[in-house]
Image (cartoon, rainbow, N blue to C red; front, side, top):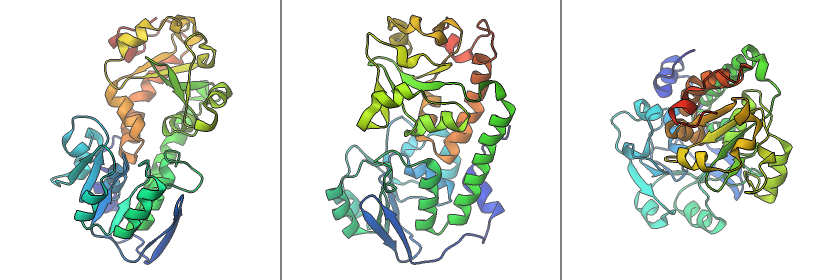
Length: 325
């Protein structure tokens, strides 16, 4: 499998001079339409994951909103090559309109930001502000659409299309080569107060792109929330899936071991649990072009071990976490 080695570098080499840069552009979103009059030079990302997408397109934001983690400038290992020596301003916590205004941006990326209507109204007076895709909710825009929309706003749509095509082809290759798990059920869950992601969330979409099916029980439990379902402590039946992924954002292996009904799931008894360590969990949560390559490199061997039909086959991360059946 090809290893990701800095998408921005690769794309700029392959597509030098080929970027589509037709301005002005108008991009519809949940709060209206954003008009970008010219190629932006000072881009601010208040999206919790948007800086990855910008960097993948060779656009370095002057400021970004850090989600979590200890990496410099809020950029995780899979995108640090794309960041290079840049030193963007790092924002944390709630959206700070005054701080953004002082940065004098000419474009604000706000997909996957949780931005409210009133915040959009103020931010759009500062600079063109790109909100989430219409009808997708705050966090439901697929990564392909997020990348294309940022490509439109920054004059890098051709690069965006090339990246989408490459990653979609890589997912298709895995689906074609791994027929034993196509159409089987899977979910990404977390321990503690147990929950699971739906097909409307990036993590659920990752599983579907690999050929898994998210159980309808998870979708039904989520209801109007759409993105995740809370699992009742007395009923783990929604987690009765063929491949059960446990996300770990740090220190959750012990919580997983302590779940009293975890041992009632088929995945536990049949050796089809996959413990996703904190770095890989972050990659799946970001679901950016760079982190998806990183995630595919790491997670596919784990799925192969879990889905080989032999409960005795060890799943490496589960053993490392001390949670193997």
